[in-house]
Amino acid sequence: MLVIMNNDCSGQSIAETLPDEAWQFYDAAVTIGRDGRLRRPRVAPHLYVANVAGKGRGVFCEVSIAAHEVIEIAPVVVLSPDEIEHVRKTRLKEYYFEFWDTYCLAFGVASLFNSSQIPGEILDLTVVRNDVLARSDGAGARFAKALTGAWYEVLAQMSATGPAGDKVLTAIAEGQQDTLASYREQLSTTKMFYTPRSAIDFGASTDMKQKMALVRQFVFEHGLLGNNTKSVDDVAIKYPDGTVQGKPDRVRLTFDHSYMGLAAQGKL
Figure 1: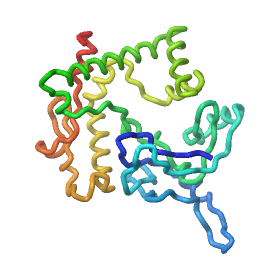
Figure 2 (figure 1 turned 90 degrees about the vertical axis):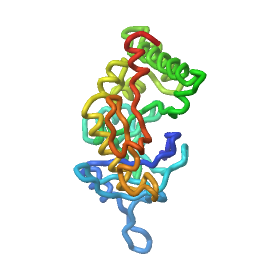
Figure 3 (figure 1 turned 45 degrees about the vertical axis):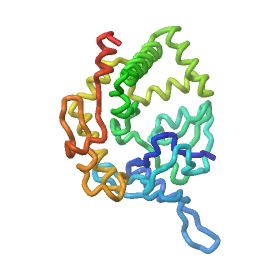
Figure 4 (figure 1 turned 90 degrees about the horizontal axis):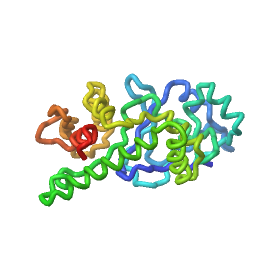
């Protein structure tokens, strides 16, 4: 079985989309109970399936999910190394799960989770409160510089070629009870910004703003901002160039590239 849980310590709700062929698979995954009625695979509490304009059907949650809360315990078919090589040549390559050195196809609602259709809309960020960064004793700024410097130091080691890079990636893989080959595969499906300049360029792009506009509209329409949020503009986003999506007096998320800029200039 496969246990699906929320690993995001922010406790935010989830949202995934899937193409029609995956939904057809889900439609087919029905069973006939002893009472003669058709039954779909069990959907976890608070989850529901809905259409997303231009995306397809998706799995949504109507409440916030606590970090490490179990969402689904799904039956799986475990695949051998030879079988997974075949799967990777088919459309199922977007739907298998990998944990340690094991591969599997999951059934139930777990089979619907796939974020490959929404590139750039799920970002791994370091989020710090503005009042922490602005501490009068300078501790917040020192913390930000130290964290940024450490981050790009590790990324530089990870992206190194030859034995040096392999050594670092092997250590990371072993730390999560994984193999080097498996960890490399994970990295191959993740867009990594190995240099501060590449992250700054993406953060300053029009594409970034467009993605965030989609995300904020999505979370508002699905009630993920709370019942007291009456307009999508009530939760605004501010960008490094000073532009704001939403009401200027309601900025709740600020993208700040200043520390990455210092890293790019070697001034941390």
